[in-house]
Length: 422
Ligand code: ACO
Image 1 (cartoon, rainbow, N blue to C red):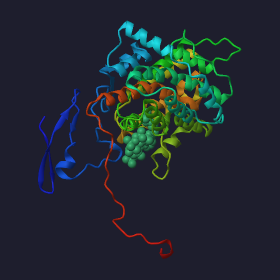
Image 2 (cartoon, helix red, strand yellow; image 1 turned 45 degrees about the vertical axis):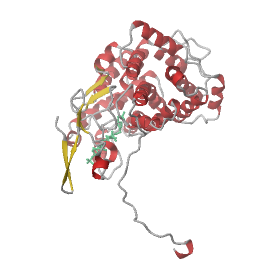
Image 3 (spheres, rainbow, N blue to C red; image 1 turned 90 degrees about the vertical axis):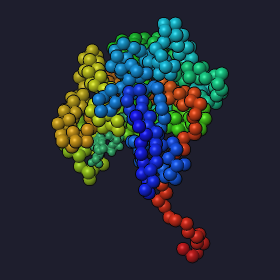
Image 4 (spheres, rainbow, N blue to C red; image 1 turned 135 degrees about the vertical axis):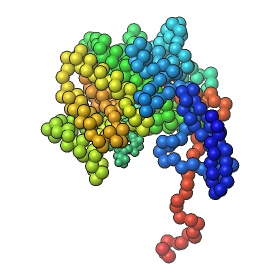
C-alpha cells in the first residue's frame, strides 16, 4: 500500500502505511513529531494503535475474535482454559507433553505462602474482593524476585496462585475457613472447590458448573488492547515487575465501564426487578441524555455488530440454567431488555449490542458465585492475556517506555502572586 500523505501548513509529508496480516491498515506516525513538530490527538485512543501484536485479532464490524488465529467459537467448543492460556502466552497450541507439563506446573504452584494468609486478616469482611486481589498480587513480588531466570516460574506462580488468592478472599468475606488447593482437581474444579467446600462436608464439583466456568474463562482470556491490557503494557513498559504490572491491570479492570460491568449488570437487573420489572422504562432512561443511567452490559468500543462472546454466552446461560434446574427471573428481564433495545432506533443507530458482561453475570449467579466476585472471575480469565501481552512487549527489542504526549490547553506563563496580594 502507498504511503499516506499529510499536508500541514502547506507542506506535504509522507507517512508509511503498515498493513496487518488480516488487512488492518495503520498509518505509521512514529516520525511525525520529528518531521512536522506536530502530534496526533485522539482522546480515548479510539484511532490509535499502540503496538503491533501477534496475539489476538478482532474485527468489530464482523464480530470476529481470534486468539493466535483460532476463532473463539472453536476454542470455546474444543479447548480448555489452561490450553488457551498456553496458546496465548507461548504462541502455539501445546503438544500433549507440553500441556501435561503446563497443567502439572499449574497444579503444583497453587499454594500460597502460609504467612500470606495473615494479610487477609488486615481487611474488613466488607472489603471488595477486587481490592484484595490486587494487593495480594502485588504482594507476591515480595516473595518471588523478578529475574529473567525466574520468568517461566513467575508466570506459572501467578496463573496458579491467582485462583487461590481469589477463593481465599471470598472465604474471608463470608467468614469461613480457607480451603486449600487440591492437586487432583482440574483448574476450574479446584477453584470451585476452594470457594464452595466447607471442612465439615463433602463437596462434589458439578461438571456442568466446572465446564461453564472453563468456558467463561476462555471467553475472557484476551481482548487485544483494551483498557486493562493497555494498562498492563503501560506499567510493564517502565520495567515494573510482573506482579506489580498485573496488579495495575486488575485495578483497571475493576471499573464499571470495563470488567466491573458484569457486577453492575446484575445490580441493574435486580433494580429493574425490584421496581416491578418494567424494563421498557429503563430503556427509556438509558436513552435520556439528562439521566446518567446506561444499560450496563450494552455497547462496546470495538464491536459494532455483535460481540461473539455474548452470542456464545446467551446460549450457555440457557443451557446452564436448564441443567442446574434454575429459573432465574433476571434472565427473563435480561432477554426482554435485549429484545426491546435491539429494536429501538437509539441503540440501532449507535450500534449498541449486548457485550460479554451482559450474560456472564447470569451464569455466575446460577453457579452460586456472589455478585462482588464476578469481576474477580473476569480477572482470572484475563490473566493469561495480560501475561501474553506483557511478555510480547518485553520480548520486543524495540520496546520503549510508554509515554504519550498532550496538547496543553492551560494558562500561558504567568507570575506568582504572594497569598496576601491575591
Ligand atoms: N446505554 C445507553 N447509551 C449508551 C451505552 C449504554 N450502555 N453505551 C453507549 N451509549 C451511547 C452514548 O451515550 C453515546 O451516545 P451519543 O453519541 O448520543 O453521545 C454513544 O452511545 C457512544 O457511546 P460512547 O460512550 O462514546 O462509546 P465508547 O466507545 O466510548 O464506550 C462503553 C464504550 C464504555 C463500553 C459504553 O458503551 C458503555 O458505557 N457501556 C456500558 C458499560 C459496559 O457494559 N461496559 C463493558 C464493556 S465490555 C468490557 O469492557 C469487558
